[in-house]
Image (cartoon, rainbow, N blue to C red; front, side, top):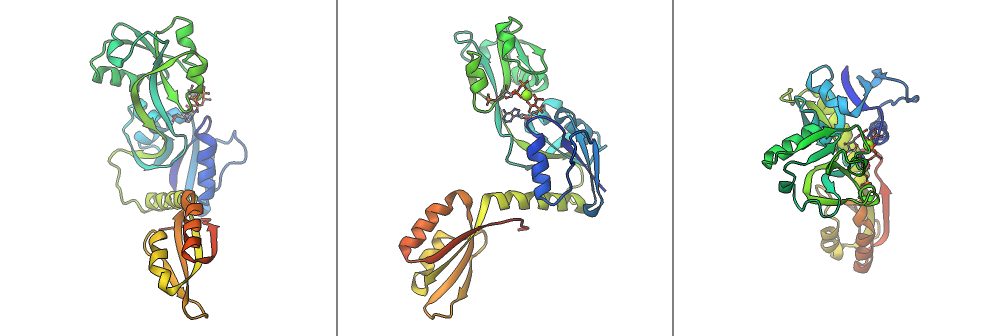
Length: 282
Ligand SMILES: Nc1ncnc2c1ncn2[C@@H]1O[C@H](COP(=O)(O)OP(=O)(O)OP(=O)(O)O)[C@@H](O)[C@H]1O
Ligand SMILES: O=P(O)(O)OC[C@H]1O[C@H](OP(=O)(O)OP(=O)(O)O)[C@H](O)[C@@H]1O
Ligand SMILES: [Mg+2]
């Protein structure tokens, strides 16, 4: 059985379970379940705190896990990222009250509050800054108001939380984070069970990003049409009963589909259809 760590709470939990479900795995019905065996698919899920996942995987007790890149790097665990999952995207940034500092290099002697002390300590050291780091569990924005710190370092998605706290972002992002699949650093890359899991997850990513497009076009316009819909490998072209016309089938990016349909129509294509992809293996 492949042993997989899945976030049990927070921003990563629901999208991770949704993605696993789309990939054909059983998911828990009750949020209090801690372990779930999916014998049909040869996997066992362990629902753990997101922060702990890299630690379990890094120690080799679990084979792979889903966590945030920021949590992975903060943990210092002996684990590495093997697949980006495209959800829970955020940046990790410093913020202060306006006028406190313009750049990380001006933080010397100040206190930085964060839930990610590993990440922040390393970043300050890399920049040669001698600042104290105080670890808080969450709601770190309030640390400045209460005088616990002059600077915070935290996850920023829309920036609303910082704006509401009257804080401004300082310096470039420390990190761009998203949900990732991790495994023990240096683990065998060719484990067939891991490979199969990754193919399933990649299948979900492709199914989410692409639609299938079908259309009919006069044969003499085929090359121009195919230039608009090159597909991932090469489009399928089939003859139609009506000589002089062909049918084309190709994958296109979902967020480009409407523009491509307009361009194909202008080119003379008709019966242009898009259909969702439910699952795929490339
Ligand atoms: N608002 C957000 N938008 C996108 N990703 C986020 C957001 N907040 C946290 N994350 C990501 O979620 C992961 C942290 O998960 P964790 O469950 O520890 O915190 P959380 O989602 O803030 O939940 P909570 O604070 O309620 O426990 C990190 O990878 C972080 O980048
Ligand atoms: O840029 P935004 O869109 O405002 O999102 C970022 C905020 O979301 C998370 O907080 P959460 O609500 O999880 O509270 P926490 O601080 O207790 O973790 C994160 O810690 C930031 O504070
Ligand atoms: Mg949070």
